[in-house]
Length: 433
Ligand SMILES: Cc1cc2nc3c(=O)[nH]c(=O)nc-3n(C[C@H](O)[C@H](O)[C@H](O)COP(=O)(O)OP(=O)(O)OC[C@H]3O[C@@H](n4cnc5c(N)ncnc54)[C@H](O)[C@@H]3O)c2cc1C
Image 1 (cartoon, rainbow, N blue to C red):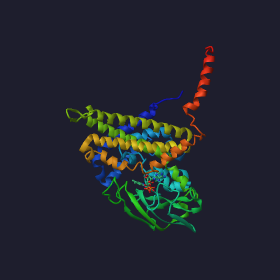
Image 2 (cartoon, rainbow, N blue to C red):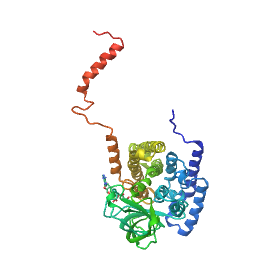
Image 3 (cartoon, protein in one colour):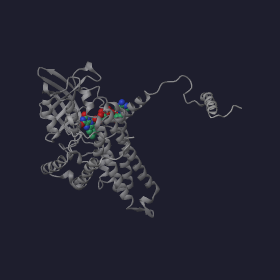
């Protein structure tokens, strides 16, 4: 029977290298990371990335046929958990959103010439990309309806529309734009994806939007979210990815494995947060005993551990299912882990803030900042409500309606129970009275 919770020794050695690398090279930089001189950071970042590449761990999420390492989702899940402990490590390991999802999209939909131009440079970290789907005046949760259009004009496509919350658009080289090409194709064949270089005339970056994570946003920083206007923005015909109408299917390609990686990165962050909670609990006293001695604090510690461990196993199981059956066969499971783990991490972060008191609420610890950025989890990549709805509908398909009493109605089951009892007694050799 195959039922093994151990990672093979070679891969465990890779994970251990990652842990040590992140602990020794990246986490120590965190207190000053935001203020590092950009030109010097680029050089240091390349130096760090080279070490990751030498280990064969760079951009590892793509299939081998698509230029990746072919680890499969279970190993990628383990890697993502390690990476999640330190936010800046995503860029060092080449798994930073939105590039990672964009590369999956290009890997699946782009021609060889398009891959040469955009995918491989993106994978090598030479260019960066953004993905523009969400619009200000239509629900981003429902990509079957969008107002941005792309109309063919000779050898060009003309894009008009308004997008917002486009991560990294103000620092990216290209943006992958989701635009409607044929309204009659709604709901799933109406849109297409175009690569638009950021310096294309007709593309205007209106602003970077201040958010909970960055209330005092500074324009043009990695991790910002931009508002974009497309006014008669023209791109050559060969900037269309796939065929007209492929947009929805291609956009889905960005998300399959991505949900597992997100979930595991959140759990990496949750575990680091729990470490902070526990260290504080064994270090500070109140009302004559350590915080760790108060039962409610013990409840926070135990509950957080239980929730993290349960969420890890659920996510590993989903990763294993993706490897075995493919992402499309386990769509409801992928949504389930996204909706579940996004809540677990926030609950753990919240308890850590609580146990650390004013210090937890302050920016002297990293937890408040993690909480603010991770609060996006239940909203983005399909709101949790949507995933729960898909899960519930998938589960409900397995049930058939009954007329009259429910199947489990005890009085209705009594005659069958008595008949079964007579049968069992007879088989066991108990004589009838
Ligand atoms: C930090 C950040 C980064 C982002 N990066 C990008 C990016 O790079 N590219 C991009 O295109 N977009 C990006 N977005 C936008 C993000 O994808 C959308 O915010 C998300 O899809 C939700 O869309 P919306 O904000 O329009 O909310 P809406 O669609 O208006 O939904 C609002 C709320 O309504 C409820 N709701 C909606 N639909 C349902 C339903 N079917 N059932 C039950 N309840 C429902 C949920 O509570 C939901 O949270 C980003 C957003 C943020 C905050």
